[in-house]
Each structure stands twice: as structure tokens, then as C-alpha cells.
Length: 362
Ligand code: EPU
Image 1 (cartoon, protein in one colour):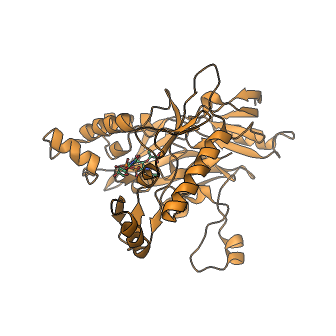
Image 2 (image 1 turned 135 degrees about the horizontal axis):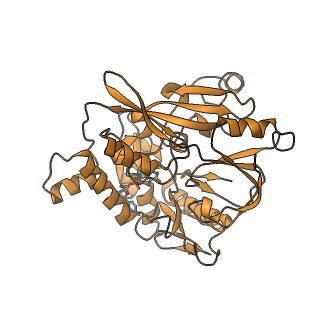
Image 3 (image 1 turned 45 degrees about the horizontal axis):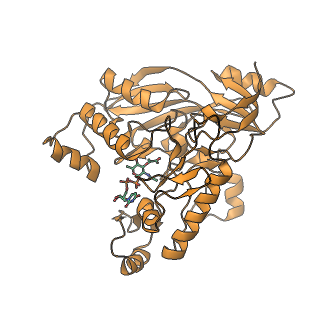
């Protein structure tokens, strides 16, 4: 086992924040995790799992041992009456998996093209775009327990997927109605306890396009194409994302910085009374989802900057590193978080809504 010391993390996080890992171990398989756990010096130390680094804000050098997941491979591993089952190593790039599945003739991931990050990070966040979330295509995953070295599989229910949420983001899984003490002992979450090794997806044999989103409908009208193929949707989603989201290779960012908040119908009516233009979507359970990008935009944040951290000009939901790539200089995690807190305060003061950050702050 090779433990690399003082490893620069700037190229390993998509915000391109300058920080170092005191120690970093590359994980190519479960054997690498077991070797680390068995090591008397490194085994007992706190650990941080890093995938594509597309959903973290580093606020300083990282003291826990960084486990850089590099498990590879993409295969068809089975089929059911309804679906092809495809398995991918956690270290594969998500977008490459989307491309590969389409090329093999297994559509279903096209709406989620160009989402940055790795396959292993996709269930943590339950990534999603243009009407499809990972949970809609998820079959199961293999993970390894970072205390015992035991490999275990989880199905979708066990992953407890929610909007940009899963069992991997929680120390405990909240159960509606359960008392807190019982929850703590019965429903342990997996935050910092498991490393995802492989993810299996179920891609429908009878494919139907998911077209409900306004941006996609606009493309259908522009191209006079009411029945697009999966490849066409893939190309459109790539175009749409390139037009409104910054490419992390050019300008550091972590995608949407805040979740779209959900409010009750009464809260929404109150906000509409104050600002009739608020962008909102009614959900099946009677609640209403608000567009966080619109809330931030209407507080005047587009293009604003704190130090080298800024709000992207074309999408107020995305915070960017304006100095990334310039001689290793750029925004610090502190600047990003100062900007994020200022945005939260102004949205709260104007709309009474607390925006919840999406990335993990380390
Ligand atoms: N809007 C504004 N001003 C802005 C940004 C947005 O007025 O600065 C308005 C838009 O005009 C639109 C609405 O807000 O009416 C929603 O914007 P958009 O369609 O761009 O989607 P979003 O809600 O901002 C979400 C996801 C994205 C995903 C897109 C498409 C979250 C937190 N974000 O963004 O996911 O690609 O929908 O499905 O749910 C990510 O998670 O990193 C991400 C990019």
C-alpha cells in the first residue's frame, strides 16, 4: 500500500480550491481498503472518501486520510424481463458511463449527461437532471464498511434516496414519527462509514423519452422533433448544460450550490403575494418546490464576488472560483462559504427561506 504525503488537491476537486491532503491512498479495489484498515499506523485514522471531487468545498488542508476512489470497469452483468443491468466501478466518470451505455444500445441515462463527478458519487447525491434522478435507474450497489472491511450490497430502499440525498449523507436516517433515541440506535446512516465500490443500474429494455422539462421542450420545438431519440436528448442536454453551466475544467465550480427548497402551499402563496414572478413547481404531495436560482437571482446576486469566489453570471445557483487555474491561486474555501452565507442571509431576509447547501463542506 502506498501512502502519498502532502498531496495537492487542487486538481482533485472541481472547485479547484488550493488545499493539501496530509495523506492520500488510491483505492483500486476492496483489497486496497482492507490493506489500509489492517495497517497499524493508518488503519485507525479518520478517513475521507473522495470521488471526482465535484461536490466538496475544501476549507483547509485535509487531516483525515483521503481515500481517492479509482475502482474501474463498465460491464453488462445481467438482465431482467424489463431491464439491462449494467455495473460500473465507482471511479469511472459518470458522463463516460452515460456515453458508454448509449453506445452499447442501453438508453436511459441521457437526461443526466454531463453531470460532473464519478459513478461512486452518484448515489450519495442521488444526482439528477431534466426529470430523471439516479434513483429512477438504480438497481443496487456494493460498498465496503470502513471499520470492518466487510463488503455489502444495498438496494434502492436501503439507500434511502431523496432529493439530492441518501443514506450516505447522514449519520442517522431520520424516520418520521420515530423518537430520536430509538432512531440513533436502530437506523444508522453511512456517512463516513462506507466507501462505494460499484454501482448497478437497471436500464429499461422498452425505452421512453423523458421530455417534460421546459429546456428540452424548447429544443424539440427548435428542431421540429417531437419524438427524439436517446442520442438526440443526450446531445440537447449537453448543449443546454454547456450554455448555462460553467465547465469545471475552465472555471472551478461544484454545480448547483444550493438545493431547491420545498415549502408548503401556504408559504408559497405568501411568497407569491410578495413577488408574483417566483418560479415554483407543484409536487404530487401538495408541497411546492421553489427555484433557488430564481430566489438568489432576484436578490441581485448574479455576477457578484467575494474575494475570488463568485456567483455565475448565467445561473445564480452556481458559485464559481474566478481565479482557478491561475498559478495555483484562486478562491479559498473560506471565501466560497462567506459568499454562500451572505446569499443565505439575503434570501432569508427577503423570502423567509433557508437555503440548504448541496456540497459537502470539509
Ligand atoms: N432561474 C433564474 N435565475 C437564475 C437561475 C435560474 O431565474 O439565475 C430560473 C430559471 O429561469 C428556471 C428556474 O429558475 O425558471 C430553474 O432553473 P433551471 O432550469 O436552470 O434548473 P435549476 O432548478 O436551477 C436544477 C438542478 C440542476 C439540474 C437542472 C435541470 C438542483 C439544485 N439543481 O437546477 O442540477 O441540472 O435542475 O434539471 O436541483 C446540480 O445539481 O449540480 C445541477 C446542476
